[in-house]
Length: 464
Image (cartoon, rainbow, N blue to C red):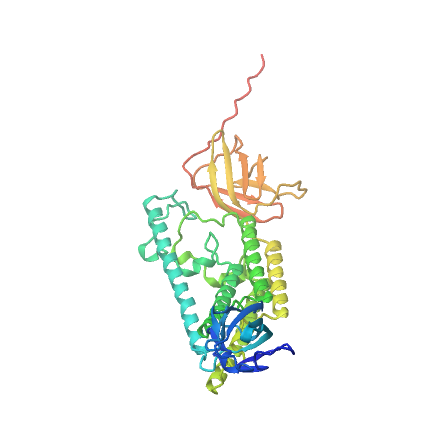
């Protein structure tokens, strides 16, 4: 519906005070003026000039206007805009050699036409977006699987240093049936294939928010609503920011606490940690991991419930033959916001997770023993702790087959260097033990081929 109200000069009125025309509201519309002339202006020539332009459209004024083709054309610049618009113009004529001028104001109330219904049912949009997100996920899974197979084949062609079992027997090659071919869930694993709870939470929120966003946007564009009102809310952006931060800092903590988190080779399929180890710190489940896991699913569940409730309202409107365009629902369809309480709980649970991970005691492990020149030995591993003065006997020491090494040249969190005393022999199969300053013991057999013998001390000659 378009209403044309003309405010005329009291001394000269060319048009009737009010002209009403019907328009579909989305395409250009001609506003005829010739049928509403205030008096006889047969064969008169008119001039129309624009005094004030509309905000949401443009105006076309034809040339050589006469009483038979007197009109102006309004062209919407935003076809999906719903609301009011206006324009102001001046019309003049020299009929009977007398100049007459009148001012007019066009008031336009724009609505989407009744015949312009939403084309895509909301639940159809949900199914399409769910299929699209699932398809992308499967494509990523396929790419990851192919990439892992390629890496595994390259490492098979270029074998690394042989590994040994606890008795220093070389491990045989991986059985083809036990060869790990990669998995989609590698996307949430660390470099040593342990699954990351922070990455898992980031992945879940990414998939859910992408699914809801695409569903809402499909509903909007099916009704020609192309304005960007489906943008993510502050709560949604906050959740994504918290997930990204937690995943990043969790990865940094893993590098600090578990120096072996970057694997050198593709593992056996049977040795890849299960996803359930996300809830385990060291060798036992811990509360700070469980609370992050459960709050993630509570938050996701509430968010999906709110989102589907909104979509269900639109679906019911369609079922009842309610025209969404008439009630302006289409322009109000947006991505559901996330309650501030859920954002706060997510932030607190992430903070508790990172704090617990930082303070948790981790396993002390010896990963490799390397013999250098001049009787030097380097022990590589995890969580040896920093060197400090200890007054407790038997702590902060290294033993070679139960013989204590008097001094260490380097004692760092992931490396200990020492010189083998002359009275100690190091051969393949002997045990090296590290006792940290906290009293935690790590043991590993030396399986190298280099032997460090005992050096006999020269006997002193009796004086003559």
